[in-house]
Image (tube, one colour):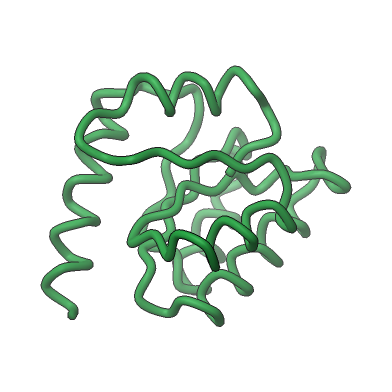
Amino acid sequence: MDDDPGIRTQIKWGIQGFEVITAETRAEAMQQLELHQPPLVTLDLGLPPDADGTSEGFAALREILRKAPHTQVIIVSASEDIGNAEKARSSGAYEYYPKPLELSRLQQILERAYKDYQAAL
């Protein structure tokens, strides 16, 4: 989930071995979560209506984990605040990966997260 269409496209076409479903907003993401029940979610913290902050991203994280507690949520954010990384992990995020995206690194994180998801079942 990312409000930047370029990032969504980059992930959709650059990640291999996973079906990538995109969402721009928390509401859209929750619909996709209910429809597809994905094992993994990438989540930007800066989402509308708080695109310059993190409140909407953290609200999305809480809602995802409440509705799908086994889903591995990887935060992919431009926020350089180390406090956000710590807060994300303590709130249940699997990993915090700072932008800019390096698709090969994100691919590795997703593969590791998927293995951990499968082991937890």
